[in-house]
Image (cartoon, rainbow, N blue to C red; front, side, top):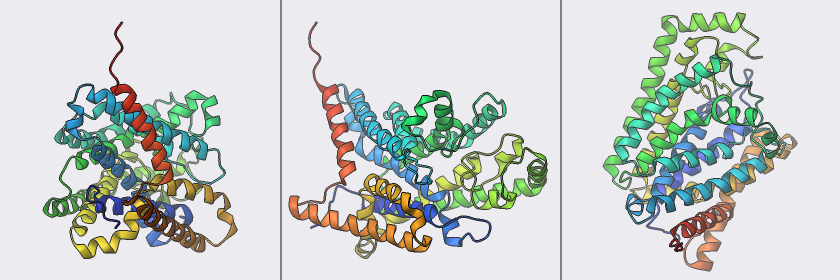
Length: 395
């Protein structure tokens, strides 16, 4: 009853895993005194997986043949922009809450707006440009930050009230913040390239899994080699004699979590690969992990037992906007219980709600339906495409 042959269950499952992984990093404290290994394992990787999957979903929803139709690209670009507008509006609203989170939805919405410009590129161009973007854009942005021409980032989530200071708002959103859009666009490009591939082929999916894992390991190895060749010594010096960079140790910063970008007082920072440091090695590593997870999930779902195993994740992965929004809203009460209990409640609640929604909508309509907020975004996209697709009135 719940099967939908037009969907890639592996993509839904990977998206569900990314969503639950982000809940882990939000609820399990990442501190020097007691960061758990499994929480660190998701740090930086869950949000990157979500971003790469956003590119995959975009490519799957906008097939190349639709772009060759009359007014095809303007129509599809309008649909993407409308969907992005809904995501941005939700993100700005969530930013007003005292959730304690770096809400990522506004960044995703802006990434979708940028992606509309490259919808017509073939898979090879998207993949090559994506890898080049991940490697080179952090270097360019490091130079911009080092020049000191941008306002310092205040580490607030983008919110409606932040629009009162456009320079602060947009510099944080694009360059200096938790998820600098100009760096993260490489994730979208890589995801779009994957979305143009035949992910239902088990051999291709397995190849992607091994290729992604290899790229992730190579990025970590190259970073370690550079740090051992003198980079770590240089960074220890600027950390100790800099401007009081953080209230925690350099080891924590390199291994557990940065704040989206590195300090701009040494070019050696570009050699690190720690989570949320935004360096070429961090971006390449997390993109590789994302490709590996997507490939493994799609390969697993070629087996009936595999599809059954990941079904709960795939149901959650069909409604990430709804579940993420509910999670952020619930984080307002994050201090009311033990973190591990809260994590159990958030994950359990997400899985139960997703399963109930799929079952109820399938019973009512004959097929599972997208989540409530996904439905709003899809409706906005359809309306925008229809409007652009209307014939022009004669003068």
